[in-house]
Structures are given as C-alpha cells and as structure tokens.
Length: 529
Image 1 (cartoon, one colour):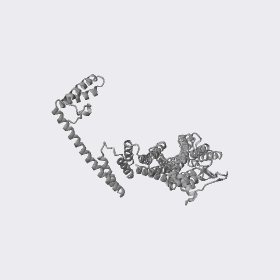
Image 2 (tube, rainbow, N blue to C red):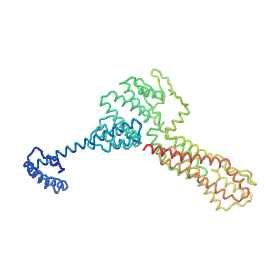
Image 3 (cartoon, rainbow, N blue to C red):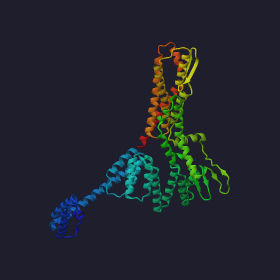
Image 4 (tube, one colour):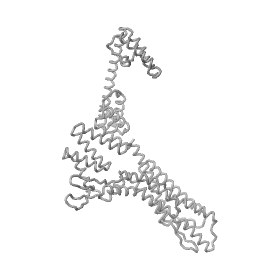
C-alpha cells in the first residue's frame, strides 16, 4: 500500500487501531454530508477511508502497514542519495570541462547533471551554477530558466539578480525598466548581506552598466561615489567619475549635475522614431511624380534619420536647462572638457554614429549605393540626343516626362507628325511609375538600413532586388524597341551615357550590400540563440 493514510487523513501514528477506526467513522460521516457540495473530494476521501479501515482493522495489520511505510521511506532516501551522487559527479565534470574550454563536453555533462536533478532539492547554489554554465556555452534560454528556479528557492542571494540581468540583456528580451529593477535588487541584496566585497562589486557593476549601457549618468555617478565611500582607491569607480567629468557635466560645490550626452537610448528619441516611421511612404505619391516625389521622399528620409535625434536633444536641454560644459566652482569661467583618444576625432565620431544606429560597414556601403542611384536619377543627364532641326537635347531620368512633352510640342511646331496620343499617354504613365519606383524603393532601402530589425533588413533586400530588376527590365525594353533601327548602337550609347552607368553602379552596390547586411544580421541572431 503506497498511500500514507496518516498524512492524507490526518491520523496519529501513536493511536491504537480501535481509536483510529473511531476517527475514520467520524470522517466517513463528514464526507458523506459533503458529497453534494464537493463530489470529487468526497469520492477521494471516502475511498481512502474504506482502504484505511482494512489496514487498521486490527493491531497486527496496523503494525504490518507501519513497517511497510518505514521500508518505503528508506528506499526513497536511498534513491535520493543515489540521484544526488549522480548529479554531483556530472556537475563537477561540467565545471572542469568549462574551465578547460571544452564547451561541447561541458554541455553534455551539465545536461546529464540536470537530468538527475532532485525535484525536491533546495540547493539554489547548484542551480545558479548550472545557469552560469549554460550561459557560458550560449544556451541562454536554459540559463534563464535555471536562474529563475534558483531565485524561487532563495530570493536573497544577490548574485542571482546579476546573472539574470546579464542573461536577459544577452537575449534582448527585457525592457529597460525590468533591467533597472534587477540591478536595484542586486544592489539591495548585496547591501543586506553585509559583505563588504559583495557590496563594492554590486556598486561597481551597477555604475558601469548605467554609464556604458543605459547612458544614465546620474545613476552611474551615484553608485560610483558610494563605491568610493567604502574604498577610496577603487580604480573602476574613479575612472567612471573621471569619464563623466570629461564627457560633459557640470561641477557644483559637492556633486556633478549630469546631462545625458547620448539621446539614442532616450525615451524621446524612441517615441519620435516610432511615430515618424508610421508615416506611410506612399503619401508622397500624391504629389506630381516627376516634379515633387523625389524631393518629398528625400525630405522624409532626412526627418526619419535626424529628426528623432534633434528632438531628443532639444528635450534634454529643455529639462536640464544647461549645456554640456564644466563650470568652475569659484568663477563663472566656462571650460570645455576634451577626451584624450588615440583615434582621430572624425573617425571616432563615425564609429559612434554607426554603433548608435547598430550599423555595420555593409549598411554604410548600401547607403552610399542609394545616394549614387538617386544622383543618377536626379542630377546626371540620362538622355543626351542630337535631334534634327531641334539640335542637342538632354534631360535627367527624373525630368524625362517633361523632356518628352517638350519634344512633342517642338515637333508639332515644326510640322512633324507626333506619335498617337494613346501611345504617348501610355509611355508617360509607364515612365511615371518607373521614376516613382526608382525614387521610393531606394529611399525604403535607406530608411530600413537604420532600423535594427530582421523585418527591416528583409524589406531593404527585397526593395533593392526589385528596383534593380525594374531598371534592367526598363533597359531591356528600350534596347528591344531600338533593335533593327539604323544606328541603334549609337542611339543606345547616347541614352545610356553617364547617368545610365552611375545608376547601374549604384544599384549593384545597393543590392550587394543590403543582402550582405541581411546575412550578417541573421548570422548574429542565430549566434545569440
């Protein structure tokens, strides 16, 4: 009998069988009265009572049952000890393999260790250690699972909050508020432990994360100063304070008034970016295509890229009411701080811009390709023809519709029969669509390049592929139309002059770079998983 009637029916093991039977009769009456209100529980306990009556019908049967319970508990203890020994063996091996950088063996060993993990164990330190091993072998989801289990077992162990912070940050699955709360919990639990070294570590780590990751100068300064109060020779804390001074803060009598120097990790920047990106790009096609769409799309792109940054900086200045300068305590003289760096200022600025927008070299090359393409469409002559009686005529691709209309008007004035109006209208509509595509699709590539999401990278690659295909179709159509005409080669050379070559170069750069950026983004995303 595997049921512990003493536990289930709340009976005393010291009572005699007669007394236990009397108690069972009372409980039986009670559960019969509850059959209508709690039918499932009543059936369960009435079954237990019937079985218990058979077990406790005499003192001999009670003794036999008690001995069975003792044997069952001993067997359970032996099984638990065996599981503990297996876990400890594999757990130690996992740490040894990890220290020797044998990551595949470490993964196999920790998997086997957690496979025999006792479910009723309260060893939170082993769970915390297992989570760190999984984190070290890039199994971030499992690391997060076991650190959560460890926190459930002991919510006062400070390092668990630091580990969880690192895991969530690596997985990129948490909002800044949640990460802030984990850092605050790490500091609070470290302070409660009373361990001086743990407290200094917590202050250092929190200050460093606030300074480098969140760009929260105020909190970085606060925790650095607290760390220096305990240990004045703390190197890291002093470096953070020095960096805050050098990167633009105001020195007052006793403290530093911080001014955030980076608006990209700022709520105003994120809000502005979300709202501006929601503006539908097709809105600009409401303008006459040949004349205004290119300019409108370029203005939209400039607003998307630079607008959130400028608005965020304006909000920061408005709240702080100060400039990023240092003010001497005793005078009103203002001095600007310069950061000493081995990298040239221009190169360092470019690196910072790329880091803030999560750009890589191929993204920058794709942007370059977009600008080359748009230059070919809007600024260089695409048509350059010597027309009899009209002389030399030239036009950009963007101005081709106006160019065609002018040619028709001049031809009519000279008495030349123009093509049928239906053909001209169809050709103009096709050109309008083509010029709009050659403008809007590169702009989409440009905008999506600055958005660090997989969907944006896919859209950029597809847009570059589509615009390249459209251009070569357009190229082939003109070539097919002119085949068989006299001096068709000379005509083609005059049409595909400098602008044609520039557009082709820009398109090839754009499609190659955007596809490579998508490949790199997917590769990094896979590595994170």
